[in-house]
Length: 308
Image 1 (cartoon, one colour):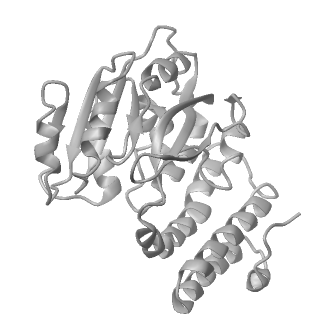
Image 2: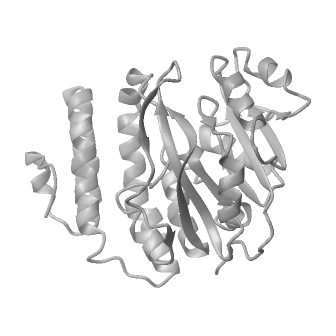
């Protein structure tokens, strides 16, 4: 089952940048990939048939970057899978076109990836606004430096730990789990980390290795909330049980509390941002999740902030 790295030499790293209509930030994103203190094996930009100048911008970096396109525009995670299929590195970082890598990313993360039996490496992230100004940092200090099975699985019951742009994952393990779940709309990164847990250790560094651009498209976040809840239903009722069954690892008694807290927290966000009708939809999806685990969902109506 263990598909993590078994070599001690420095592994090869592919930086994969999927883009769709992001001409504003793409150039800065590519420059951050080029400006690494340790050279990656390759930098691949996959343009998902953009309607703006993204493809042309990517081609101006053709001396340092390989630019590819799918034959037709794909759904987001189908495009992510297509982009990663073009990569040949032993390790992959999937860098959204509005995010940036710090110069030390490949240097710091590949050293950890070289350790035996590692499937995923996480680093600290700096949150930035549309102008690139810092709005905060997360060094993942609440996450153990080294997590083995089953801790690397159960610690994710409240959501993914770490940003996609600050994560390096084993290409072999990614292929073994079938890549991103294309039935999910927005939270397939969470499902992927859950699926990777049986394939090796998760390790982390507190170094800030990437800049994650957030909170500059607030209206888009609100529009996506109901789709996130659709994904939560699939993750709690399918993704987690699938890994649990594969590893013969019952989650009864371990999932209930984090699942309740997760739903309450995200419902509070939904209540603030959505119409009454959309919020009612999120409540119903949350109830469906809880009923699937034989948990009485009536407490959701009171919206407590946490459970002890």
